[in-house]
Length: 226
Ligand code: AMP
Image 1 (cartoon, rainbow, N blue to C red):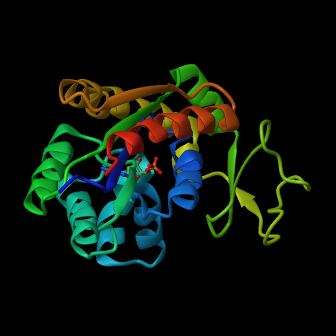
Image 2: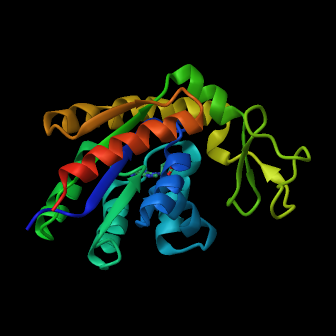
């Protein structure tokens, strides 16, 4: 049986545009999109057990312990909703997470199709994250320079106040970048060795990045043909 699932990982530093591209891909491909940062923020908001355990790490810009996050993803892969494929954003973020994902996929007879690295320099990341604003309910994202709301400080969609995410504050952004270089960047080698890595320049505008991602994905789909 050919592998006809599209099992994708979006890799890259915080603020490189994985979320923007992930949401577009979710619509285009009609696949479940699992952004672990969003899943954790929702858990914090609902004060679930996972949210309570994760909050202090997130506020500091540290990574949440591997076992917490691996459990969240394993549940979703086992649920059946990802049987046609999935888009992962923000997971895996460490080598043990990547190994756990490999183990889970082979247990359910699946394999990764590709890893798309959306890359951008630290300088660009700091510029993007320090200008990012989110609606108070967290659902809508703006940027003071690149994507400003119609009325300063107010969400175009739900009129809520726009706020800075706690972990977008400058000192926390610097720490998140350190964590990325120390713990997540080794995954570039990890997936290169498995010949799964595809690099996209994330410093361009979101439409250009989206175009590059879509044309890459069309080549994966062809390889999977009947
Ligand atoms: P993000 O929105 O992807 O930048 O994630 C926000 C925060 O959630 C991160 O700074 C981490 O504290 C936590 N987080 C998200 N995904 C993971 C993961 N795969 N492993 C550990 N921590 C994570």
